[in-house]
Image (tube, rainbow, N blue to C red):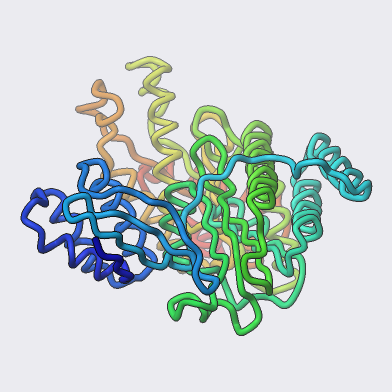
Length: 439
């Protein structure tokens, strides 16, 4: 028996040359050897090691620490040789969310009690921001971290909170984004790098300041809203108990975000189409007009009506009509920008707010929407509509060109819509075209 200390790439090469390796495992070894990103290669190597062990080719002997580095030790069952290699500076870990054991210090217990009270009483979007900020402060103080931040990857949440952070200095960006996206966001795993300075792939994230970091997902019911990063200037700073506490608060934060999202859906979303409702539309239109007064960025408003919708209801019944409206809401929402607001105005009418949009661009958007709806096969969701075409008419108005108040803008867009329907339907008309023709 001999004892050999090698890196994991050498270990893979060692087993790749063996004749007792089956084709499937050989492919896995080849894939891990071809991976250029060190941490991803390490992750694949761990999977290969587990398969080698499951096939009785390798036996785990445990870990050993040498010169401050952690080594994994295995025994080659066939030869009896002992193989050890140093673990990379980060890995996915399984952590049980938990409170810090003991809570011996009174100030810690008081701090957590205050935080949990704010979580329990959080009822609005404004309160959510305050609670999340308090949560980051609590984490930083409880685990003696230097910097704590949340990076939101969900677009709807990012529109509310670009980023929340506590502490200083600020790292240059998210930690190892590709790795975080793969391990934390997609897999929902926790990531811990106790010594990022020891690896050339990772030390660029330390900025010469930080030595360790933990990253956990803000995840609730299978959906990841963002990631929580906890940075320290010290190596091996976070204990298992620290990680459990961080994961507990990340789980609670994700639950708060989910509740806020559900509340917004309940209050501001149309239950049939899942686009915004009329109240939200009018409120946002008022906000955009006020924003124009500060920034001079024009606002376009489109009013949309389903052509001959009464005949659809009469011929096929209201359930089919509901399917048409829900499908239309999805089509409209998918074909506008993230900053645009699509809402059901009432019945078969929809409204769309287009911020920072001049008439020429609003007209192109309206024509694109009209074309998309006209070309869509509604029979995909409702087979009884196989021989029926669904089209829309659109009326438009612009602030400041056509109106300077919410009510006037809606009225003028509605008037343009009525003209589009009178002129034959399945067309786009802007109020300025009508008024120019009458002048």
